[in-house]
Image 1 (tube, rainbow, N blue to C red):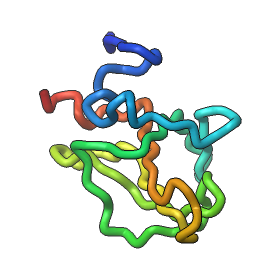
Image 2: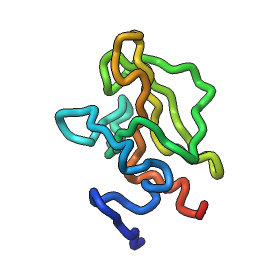
Image 3: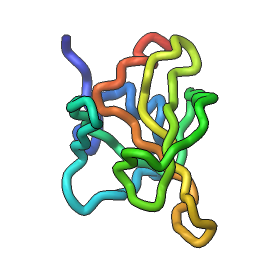
Image 4: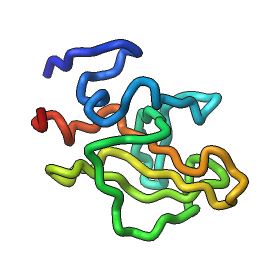
Length: 113
């Protein structure tokens, strides 16, 4: 599988979801996160995303990788595959109030364009 890469070393499909001007760094450590099941995700964070749907599942703070934020899933609007997460600030004084984590390995939009 040969994926073309643009700037920042990210696969092209990421740019169908995120504009480079919306990239943010929400972690001072690494972009790798582990869920309670032991699955490892390399995640790119951004202020906003496109071509996605937010899950109807109620956001939860449980097991959030970002203290002070609740999360829910985001999916490809076309094929419904899991692209990452929407993080919502629990406190109205937390900034940013919303951001997104997109799985670097997400392939959901590869056939959209």
